[in-house]
Length: 271
Image (cartoon, rainbow, N blue to C red; front, side):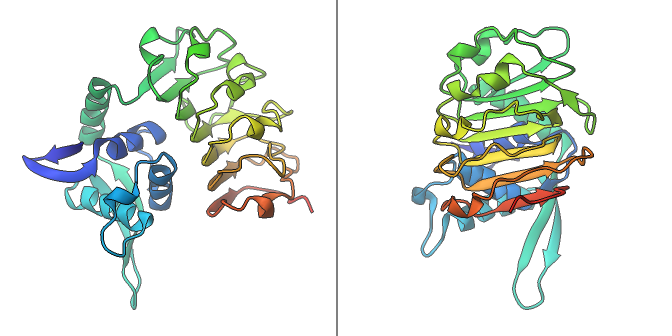
C-alpha cells in the first residue's frame, strides 16, 4: 500500500510514513539515520523492494528521498564534495502530521493514547501492533487490557513536556515489559529508569527486539547481559547527566547483530 500526494502515486508504504508520526514528537528535528534504522527494525523494508544491486538501506534511503522531494518532509542536507548528498535531519510538516495521524487511525496502523486524566488504555488499542503512549506524572499500575497487548511490535513511551523527566517508578507497565514478546522496537523518552526498574534479564524475553532506545532518560545502568537481545541491531542511548556514573556492562562486543550505537551524556564506561 502506498500513499498519494497531489494525485500522484507515492512509492512509499503508508507504514513507513506513519512510523514517523508515532516514533517522533511534534516539531522534533529527526535524525535521518534513525528514520532508516526504524524502518528496517520494524521490518518495513523487505528484499522484495530492492532493485538491482540495492541494499535494504538503499531502499530506505530512496523512500526518505521521495518523501523529501514531495515536500512531505523538511530536510537538512549535507553535501560531500566527492561523494553524494546526504540527509542529516528532517521535520514533519504540521499539515502532513495531522493528515497522517488521521489516515493512520483510519487504517488501524497504530494506537496513540495520552495519560492526562485517565490511566486506562482504551479497548481500541488492544488489537494494534504499534502503540505510542504519551503520559504525564506517574502513570501508576492501572493499565486496563495491557495483558492483551502481547502481539505489540513497537512500543513508544513518551513524556508530554520535552526535557521534563517523568518518574514512572516501579509502574506496572515497565515491570511487565516481558509480556510483549513480539516487540521489535522499544523506545523510552524522558523517563526516570534508575534503580533497576528494567530487569537486567529482560533480553531473555524480548528475543525479537531490534531497536532499543532511551531518549533524554535518567538511567544508572543499562539492562544488558551477554546473552540478551540476540537480534538487537540498534542501541540508542541518550541519557541525562544525573550526577552519578552510568554503567554500561562490557558485553556490547558480544552482540553480533549490533551495528549503529548512539551514545550521548554517558559519564563512564564499565571496563
